[in-house]
Length: 181
Image (cartoon, rainbow, N blue to C red):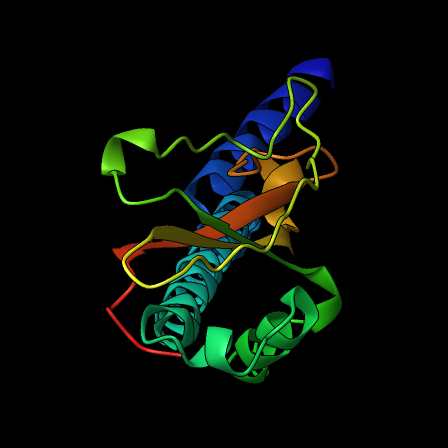
C-alpha cells in the first residue's frame, strides 16, 4: 500500500512539473514590480529633464529684460522680475517655489563668484538678491526650483536635496548691453 501511494505521488509530481499552464502569469508576477519601477523611474527622470529645460528657457528669456536694460528702465524689483519669470513657467511650476537670484559683478568676469545654494545637510539656502547692474556690467541671473520626486523609494534616487527633492537650477551670465537710461 505504501509503495502504491509513493508511486502515485511520483506520478503526480511528474505531471505537475510538465504542466506549463500559468507559468507566464507567475513569471510576469515576478518581473512586473521591477519593470514598473523602472518604467516610473524613466518617466520621472524625463519629467525632471523637461522641467529643467523649461526653467532654462524661461531664465534665458527673462534675463533678456536685464541684458537690454528694460528691467532697469522700468525699475523692476525682485518680485516683478520673478513675476515675469513665473509667467513663462505656468505649465509646470508653482510660482511659490521659484527663487530668483540676480547679481551684478562690475565690468570684469574674473570677479564673478557663484556659490551653491545647498548646504552640507542638503537643505536649500535662500540667499537670493536682486542687483541687475548698469550698462556694461557683468550680470548672473539664476533661478531655482525644488522639484518633488516620487520614485526615490524604489532605489532610483536623483534627489540632491533632503526630503526627496531635486534642486533645478538655470543660469544666464552676460554683460549688459550699453543701453541708455
